[in-house]
Structure formats: C-alpha cells, structure tokens
Amino acid sequence: MKFLHGISIAILYLLGIIKVFGGIGIHLYTVYLFFIVHGVLGGAISLFLPVLSQIFMGFKLVSYYGWNTLYPMMLIAYVLVHILSFVFALIVTYAEDKAIKKSLIKS
View (cartoon, rainbow, N blue to C red):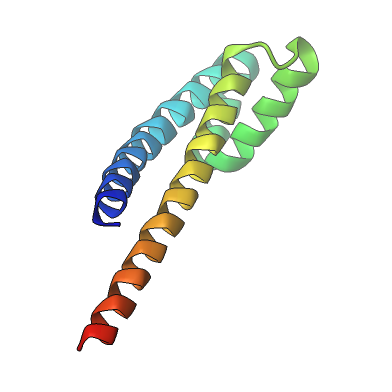
C-alpha cells in the first residue's frame, strides 16, 4: 500500500506541474488566436477572461473545422489531465485513510 501511495503522490505532483504549465500555454495560445481572429480588442478581452474565451474559441473552432485540430485536442487533453489529477487525489486520500485506520487499530 505504501508503494501505491508513493507512486500516486509522484504522479499527482507531475500532473500538477502539467496543469500549471499547460494552463499557461493554452491561455497564451488562446490570446494569440483571439488577436489573430478578433484583433486587439478581442485579444485584450480574452486576456482577462481566460476560461470564457477558451470555451468560446473551442466551440468556434470545433464548429468550423471539427475536432481534429490542435486547439480542441489541447483543451480535451487539459480536461483529461484534471480528471486524472482528481482520480489520483482520490487514490492518495484512500491510501492515507487506510494507513491512519491501520495505525489507530495497532495503538
């Protein structure tokens, strides 16, 4: 159980780093796309409303070009990283609860 706990924590930290840098990268790419498509005002608005602009640009690109483009794939991968992070957080929490219960039974 300790091995699963240690591996899960390592994967959780790695997913956290991917979430931070992935979020920054996706946000900068979204701002870049808004500057290209909508000009300076669209880029400025997307700079201050990251989640709304990512959802809007994701729907817009999917409706024009379909799912097989870079931006929707990045958004899907980013959402999957968040889901995996949640799953590994549940595993870590379960392993810690199990260890605490085991230590309370021994003492």
